[in-house]
Length: 273
Image (cartoon, rainbow, N blue to C red; front, side):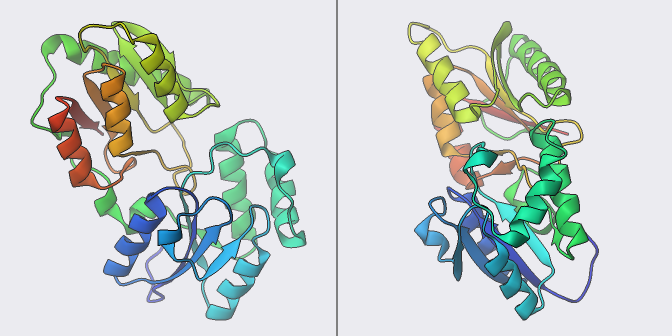
């Protein structure tokens, strides 16, 4: 993102806490933030100035132009919405048509959306560029709990598999316990972990790791990996020993709470470059 004196920015928020944390971080860093929420997704604590339906963002764009805002951050979960369920307004339809032409996978669509908005005078901004404190900045073990030498093998394997599936735009998460136990697909990370919990109900001893890694060439202006306390709880329920994330490109929702929860559950968190 180019530096300039215009500290105005718009935030379009989806589900969960990440939009709220991003809003607060932006304001602490001196940004004047215009907040819009996506109908049926945003948390009321976001307190948006405007609510927009999915696919009907023209009123928000018009308000951005009125306020002299050209930068936009999109954060918060929408799952994997089906394009056939979106009822676009005319402005959004033009953007969607550009995106659909490039529908070869989630990442390719994200890149197309970025380019389509840029042509219309809107700069999509990566949230981690303006709110870096929401991610681990330094590589290494982030918890009191540390992996053993044998668990390091699972870590290395999980990173390798994550990069492989990421290159094919399949998913960003994987579970490894000497062998690959689960790979994230269209269902998303939470449901993948639910499968692992169900699979390992009779597992007596905790072992293995969960990795949520940035995909190679992933567009981090739109698709931002994130973990939170619920992730730690799911990993504990799945009887796994650790969590692996990237530095700088994976948001940690309420960082201290995540670290505290991991320490309490005797789970290690490792950040890698």
